[in-house]
Length: 391
Image 1 (cartoon, rainbow, N blue to C red):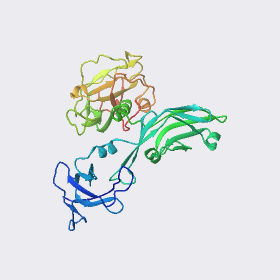
Image 2: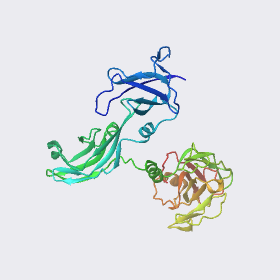
Image 3: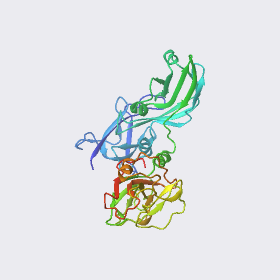
Image 4: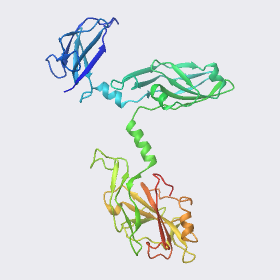
């Protein structure tokens, strides 16, 4: 195994440096003294026990792993290099971000802000990305006076550094500032006094649920494939295989890729038809219905001439069974021609059925008298190319 370097400072409870103090180093889970070296090549052995140097540093090379350092009748668990089994401190430094753990609110108080007791962390990867530091910051409840400059402007953003100092910003924090200092929020000044405050912290609690909040708000989206096209001289259509991002859908089957659902290729596709207010979905079919559209939630015959057209939407769902993966929702207005319908894609107001937890595959523009979806004079297939296309 490769050797890794360890060097760290030790001191007594009094604060005095532990200079020239003997230390015994044991591999984690063993009572046998570890083999230590003075060089990376492992050619110069060191004694164990090993003394700290005159500045209080314990310095050696050893195989990567976890070790116990026994010094001055005290034991310390340390990591040498990047061991496979990380300790709790390493795990915390990876799992935590700079931000507020508890508290974080503040209110207007004349020419000051009244900050409630707050606990946060500053995680520093920039200084040493191999051994990141984790600083717990406890901010007592207090009033913080605005600077003269802050009282002369409208907006001030507030941060706290790793030493507990309050920092005023002219603009909202940059990505670097958000990672190096704890963001609290902003205050608004009118007439020389604070009239409004808003806490907008980076919230550390429940990060997995914050991810779920975001993904559920955005909804599923197509990762790859799922291209729809005409099946032949009929009213059926095909869909290619694809992948759909849908939070946690696949976690029981593929734990290492839990958020991506496979979509089956179908030729012809089996799908269900739906209106904007459908709650009980009918059995799957393989042909679209060009002769009708959705008029205020009521299935209504398409009127007008032979070439009057509508825009039907194809949606894909994360489901295990292929017939349950696709829904075609009827159009909600009519167009004088197929060309006009194609021009209306993404423009016309459209109500997606609120029961849908799905992604838009694309549109089928079709005249009411169509019998052949492969005929461009009767139907046009348009693929939704954006992740979140407007239906």
